[in-house]
Image (cartoon, rainbow, N blue to C red):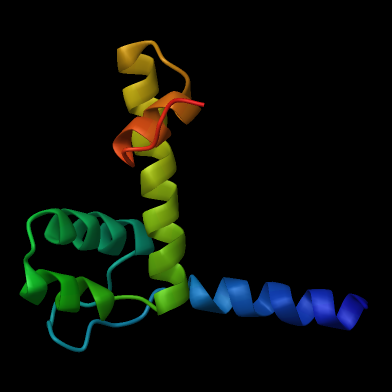
Length: 98
């Protein structure tokens, strides 16, 4: 059991490791930078930037970064609107109030 937990944890940490950008000479990008570029590119339908940001980190790291960005955005909007995070998330997704 401990071996499986250790192996699973090792996979998560490896997936969040910085990877060199093969398209630029500038070096590495962190997962939050990749997530910010990816999400903003998706919002503006910029396929070139989506592909670029997708190559900066592993898919698992990008997914984690996008999830973290979503959480922070929902919390920020909830504070600004003085609503619950659940209400804000449902509204952003076009779901009826719970």
